[in-house]
Amino acid sequence: MIRDYFRVLTINLTTGQGNIVEVGGRNEAAGGSGLAALLFGRFGHVDKPWNEPEQPLIFTIGPLTGYFPLMSKTVCAFKSPFHNQYAESHAGGRSALALRFADLDALVITGKAEKPACISVGSRHLEIKEVHYLWGMDVFATGKYLRNMFRGSGHRSILRIGPAGEQGSPMACINADTYRHFGRLGGGAVMGTKNLKGIVIQGDASFLLPENKEYPKIFKEVHNQLTDTDMMSKYHNLGTPVNVMILNDLKSLPVRNLQQTADPHIGGISGEKFAEAALLRNNACSGCPVGCIHIGFVRERFHEENRYLYRQVSYDHEPIFATGSMLGVLDCFAVLGIMDVVERMGLDVMSAGVALAWATEAFEKGLISEAETLVPLKFGDAERYKQAMQFLAMGTNEFYRTLGRGTMVAAERYNGKDFACVLGQEMAGYATGEVFLPHKPLDSDIRTWTRQDIPLTRNPAKRTPGRRLIFL
Amino acid sequence: MKILTTPKMERCIGCHSCSLACARLVHKRLSWDTAGIRIRTSGGLSTGFEARNCLACNPAPCALACPTGAYLQRKGGGVLVRKKLCIRCGECAKACPVDAIYLDYTGEPFVCIHCSRCVQYCPHDCLEMKELNEETVTDESEGDLHS
Image 1: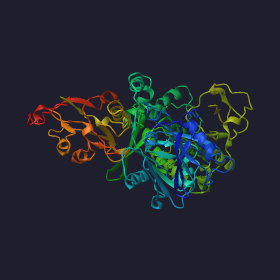
Image 2 (image 1 turned 120 degrees about the vertical axis):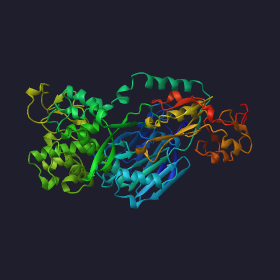
Image 3 (image 1 turned 30 degrees about the horizontal axis):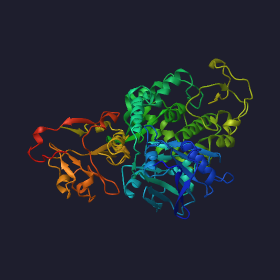
């Protein structure tokens, strides 16, 4: 329900107490982002580290959430373990509508549970349950257990972390309803440091609409625009993976740790290839008729007597770039296999892929060896990457713990900063825009990097050795 | 007489556009629950989606169970609910063999009235209005109550 103030539920994991706070600012704070920033201003501590228990983990929605199609995302805000600054991450799944129908504009979680805990919240209940037996479980197993452990089903969102979040990795994500994520900047570690394994949000309220003939008309108009025109066809059709071939043709696709920006064999992991060979079905975030979640499958023979299992793995451009082109893995099923490990571990796929891409080049150049990487890393070797992803999530050794804190952190320790593809955080799957070669590595804050040299020409033949970094 | 059917649920993406449409247009609510059709998974999001909606029984167990006559059997199948006669006892929902009646937390029942308003909102054409098979109507004099 829309009120002229924000209805915020705060939950203190230390005391186990919840509180309803009415926060003003409805006419000033725009959307979930505005509200999240407003709430961080009120509940956050800029001068304290990210893992101080009092720091808030904030989930917000906007005024249109649930009222119109596509208004289906939640904003998650926190002080990031990656760079100790304010961060925002967005996800859909069922989370936004679940918050709307739990009759909340925001959820603010502070404190730290004594033992691993899960919050269950709805429009008429709040429970904090101790779940020490779930600690250590992967994201999918956790989801299945949480489904059964809490009453109510169907119209609820299950947010959870995997081992990466439990380990406090700044590359840990929060999984939202199996196929979506609060991906970047370490939201998973914020949950982990609070001993918060999961959050189940039941959307069990309903609201009378005001007497209004306009709203259903406008809803219908918006719905028709989205579904009967080609406005959303990119997402409804191949999804963001359509970008793989487009970027490859533009020579702007990061390949093998950006050693190349195109590959003649990229067709093996194009959006078209995924759709033709590996797309099993589509899913939607609740409230959105576009349904751009693309779920691929991978079959795995686990015993020589032809015993098979299958895995369902959601894919998009960024995961394909991070575990495919960036790692030189050019077979769609091999890529899905790596993505599946990343999912189960609860890692941010983008950061993890770029981190291992750097590690592979560092390995190639002899800056690190198997003493650090535990398995030989080689571009294209998907099976090794599946193992390396687990080491990265678990922080198995000093090297992987360092790498988990950020590719640049590892590059500073082991050398190789000039090929660490980091712009503030690990790069995204596009290498477009102007191209510069700074003579020193980029500062950790994307806004403070400076151009030290004249820009390179875009002619690859004239490219000088060193990293071709990009301005995004 | 046409009823709502859900013949293509393998295509369902779980967007809830149908439920939201019913709630919005029939019941004047913002909800994915207070609707004649509701979508849930078979057992978690990896298992696909199912619809829960009235299958237009004739005779309808919910109508037989209602102690105040709030439920009217429609000729051919299905029911209409006169909310003013409803005392929110919940017997209708208990009687429904396919869990098609939703009770909100006040006990108010919500059931599909086969009006077809939801059909156009499904992006994958999972829903269809179909003529009730006349052969399944065993006794046409039963339930001859007008809405």
